[in-house]
Length: 174
Image (cartoon, rainbow, N blue to C red; front, side, top):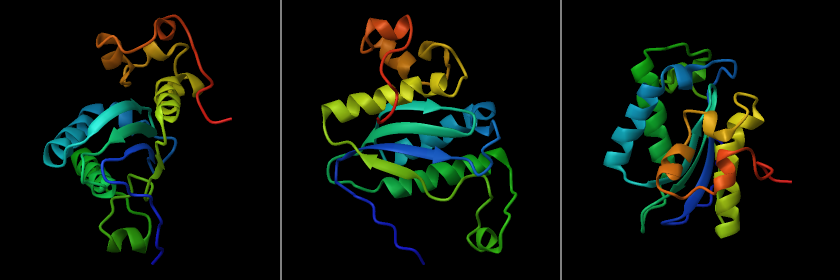
């Protein structure tokens, strides 16, 4: 068994990328209500703050801040992924290992995380979330993508005006 080294800081803030196994699928947006339901139940059981989010057809990015004294983002992702998979009813395991682990073959195994280091890092990763639909050619402006926390943050008055009229930032690390 592979041992993954993850930096787990209690109460830490993290950027995540989680992807479907089939990168040509649109399951995350076509079944967005199932995904929202999986998040809602998980957040009620194991609270965390979602600082930014974007859901694209085949992957998603999020920035979370965990509660003080809690560093267990892995269990939260396991619960979200399994609840979403069950809700869709899809069951297409493709390997003996997936069958043995009762995986449905919907998600790529694991996820990628990055611990947010400071305010500049946080701002860069929030901008990455907001700009990702533009980067992938899904829309021409970030505000045109419906599955993004940019809308929540605009309503709260936390989005710079330039996000409403076009792109800003480079949307990724140099």
